[in-house]
Length: 89
Image (cartoon, rainbow, N blue to C red; front, side, top):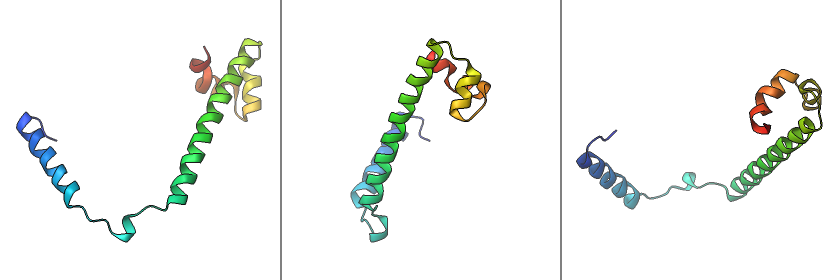
């Protein structure tokens, strides 16, 4: 990894040259449908995780034990506390 300003500039020039000289091959292209599905799935997973954190916070505020929450999540209470405890505090 470059350490000096001169090394950083030389590395930047090398990367720029590689970018400018790049000629894509048919196998380099990504399937747009696959990429779209992955993006959508990641977005949905993120939204679901936020929803789950909010639900766990509401459950804790309502006085539910970690053991009960863990049961709903399909895990132990300790595992639920370790995963969500800091996020809902």
